[in-house]
Amino acid sequence: MAPASSISTPSDATRAKLRRRILPFVFVLYIASYLDRANVAFAKIPMSADLGFSEAVFGFGAGIFFIGYLLFGIPGAVLIERGSARKWIARMLIVWGCCTVVIGFVRTPGEFYAARFALGCAEAGFFPGIIIYFSHWFAQKDRARAMAGFIMAIPVSLVFGAPFSALILRVHWLGMPGWRWVFILQGVAPVVLGCITFFYLTDHPMDAKWLTPDEREQIAAELERENSVKLERQQVTVWQALRFKNVLLLAVALSLANVGGYAFVLWLPTIIRNSSSLSVSLATACSALPFAAGLIAVRLAGKSSDRHRERRLHAAIPMIAAGVFFTLASIAGQPFPLVLVWLCLTGAAAYSWPPPFWVLPTATLAKSAAAVSVGLINAIGNLGGFVGPTVVGYLLSLQYSYTVAILFLSACFVLAGLLLLTLRVLPEPE
Image 1 (tube, rainbow, N blue to C red):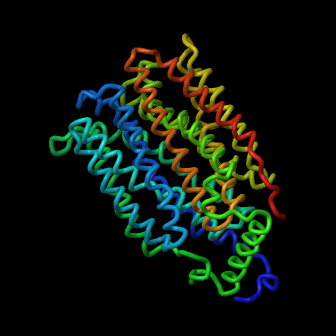
Image 2 (image 1 turned 120 degrees about the vertical axis):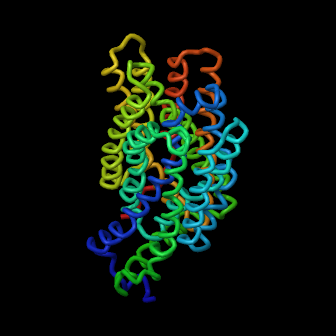
Image 3 (image 1 turned 120 degrees about the horizontal axis):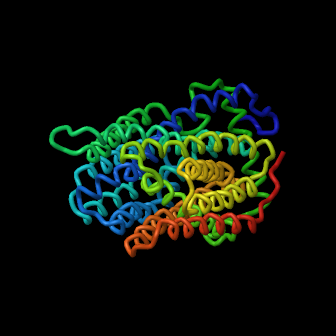
């Protein structure tokens, strides 16, 4: 490899080639990932009625996914940083697809808890691993847009997953109710995608036969220059990264945002049904609208963040806005169309903050320290996914109203944004 100083930066055409090759595929992978963790929201009402699950049982079962996520988040990210990304991502897909299928056969709370916990363990390394994988391919100035292209899969999976699941809920094949088929059918897709991943993804630019030799050299040199700048600014070891103030602030802020975010996803069909006279299937299908608003917002947020080279405010302000709009949705006596407007605005805000947010850790630390920090932030942050559904389920089982639960979730959104405003971020290199 030639000296970095003698190699030009990648052209716009080369950067576009990277986006075309990588983003559509990982976008599809994340659709499968998020749908498999969130499909319990669509199956909740008939599943709980069929198995006799209380709100507390459902909330704990939905949330225990994130305990497994906590345990295996850091190891998964480090394995992808130090090993073969395509091989580890392929394995994760196949294993979590099998775990999702198993959920379609549960009959007791214990079986539900065990299957969701196993699913969390299997998925734990995927999201932080993809963030690290992006740092192997995309320069920092392009990373928020790349993250936006990836994270758009969350609202897309829910926009299409809601009506798709609503259709599956109506079937009764082989004597099994539709909610079981939701898990079975949506678990097969990751297994197939895992097999494709092994052959499609490339670990590093220098291994990419779909790039020209000059393009490979330019991409690798640009990434090496960026990493050298970060090392000069701040020498942080792997173990120091675990105690770094920015890492802990990001982890706590993410945890609080996820308290609100995951509970919003899991209870949205129920909130819509309680605010209207819609049937279960129609309420499930209608829940696609807030996610459609999020789909538009996430793309705009990523572009704006890269254009202004600003991450902190682009993440904090949407978090606070999500809390405000969700609070407005909880006001009693409103007509259903107005409630739906507030929920759509909540969805737009709730999906705007992740692209700029996830640039922050890789913009601060280098190489393995970044891998560990991303894994730690994601693992601790996703504990919010356990706390949110568990607390909401507990509050509802004690006969508190949905308004009380929504206010709790809204407060978590707002506090997450306020914490993020205290973050100190180094200016990005030109």
